[in-house]
Structure formats: structure tokens, C-alpha cells
Image (cartoon, rainbow, N blue to C red):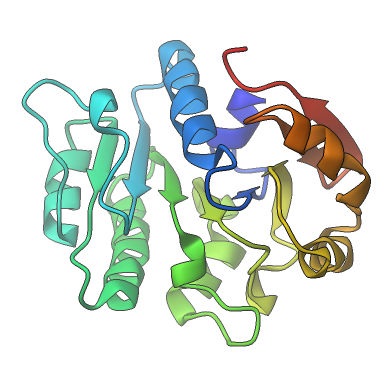
Length: 225
């Protein structure tokens, strides 16, 4: 699961980690990334954690490395470090996210061997099911796989834009409170999470591991349990 979730192999599509606040998304991401990085030996692999919350992933940085706050800082660090933590300024968030995506594509042009996993926390800030995604997000969704750029969208709701639908192949699904969310999930991804909600609510941080390609839905205990 870890390799499928985070390693850009040029074949798999993007990922979605979805659930209401406090359901375990951030814990899942941090613990699974730690486990993944322990076994990751590819010197050309890079991970960028983009968080509008300006928190998380600090203990995964190298000594003396600090979070960056602009695209230039990200590019300087990504040459030397396999993990970059990007805490953007609150103003102009969408433009910064677009600049980040475009910079990663440019980076791939100059470093063809690089493989990049971009974790976008609070992705609902940038995406809306009723609006067209930016050109940068569309580019990431449609061309990222062929460029070995993997996106992991972390969201409070099933908010994927039309241009991103059909571009997700795996999901970690935590609790969502409303039937509207369950209906959206069934419409967009072909499975109804409602029968699993009681089980998920009974155990903190439990989740469903969903392989959309095969239709497999696997209830999972909390990471580390």
C-alpha cells in the first residue's frame, strides 16, 4: 500500500485521502510517509508536502532544514533534500499552488530522472466540484503520471473537480458525517461508504483502503495499532 500510495511509477494515477476534521487524515499521512521513507532507496525520489495549515512533517526534515515559504525556497531545497515542507503565505494561496505545480513540471524538464510525490493538504481550499480547476491542476491530473509526478490530495470532503475525476486510482477513506458525501462518493468513485460508517466511527483513526480500479474496499485498523 505504501509504495502504491507514494511512489510515482509512471503507471498509477493519483491518490485521495478524505475524511472529516479529526478523523485521522493527518496522522495517517505522517505515519505512512515515515514508514514509506524508511524503505525508499531511490536517490531520485523527492516528496513535497504543501500545507496551507502551516503545520506537519517537521520531523521528516534533515538536520538544519526548515520549512520553505515560497517556490524559490522549494526549488533550492529539492535539489539536495528528498523531503521539502512548504508552508505557503496565506495571501495568494491558489497562485502559489499553481506556481508550485508549474515549477515541478519545469524541474522534471531539467532533471528527467526525478520522481516527485506532491502531497496537497487541505486540497478543498484549491478545488471545488462546481468550478473548473486551474490549468496547473488540470495539467497535474492529466500529465503528472507520464512525468512521474504523483499527487496525493488530502481533503475534508469529496471535492474533486471534473477535470480530476477519473484520475484517482486509490483512496484512504475516513469518516464523513453526511449522506450527501456518501452519495458523492458513490457517484464519483463507484462505491457507497455508508455501510462502513458505523465500523469506522467505533475505532478512532480507522479507515477504508479503496482500490478504485478493482473495486476493492478493505477496512483497515489505525496505522500503528
